[in-house]
Image: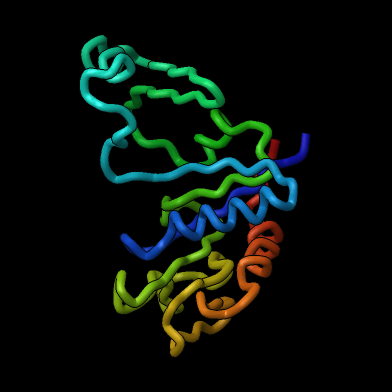
Length: 178
């Protein structure tokens, strides 16, 4: 079995992290890679509606785990004591992936692609005075004036940036030891 690679998509709230992750995932799948994803959220995920059977299993039945199986999909709810890091999560749940795209987990020791949109904040998270440029794979932005030393910057308005970004993501992703 090949080693799993991991890379994190980060950015401020409403910067477009999910949009970028989805586009990058689709490009890597188009290349025939097995892509799996992890999304960090700051609030309990809303995955079901009050009163539905799975909601009742989880909330009323207080089950430790609820596995919902349906045509072509499976969802697992699991109670946890503390948040895990994305590497631990990938090893536990996403075995067999060629690459795991992680949304969030800014502090995790993973290579990062930052989405920086001016509407989400005046500056990117990346700061060369604080961060090691080697931890950043690229910054994708809508700011035509933004420049970063030692980190590739792509503009949403450019053409073919997604193909180049997919190459960088594959080449610079963290390779998990077996």
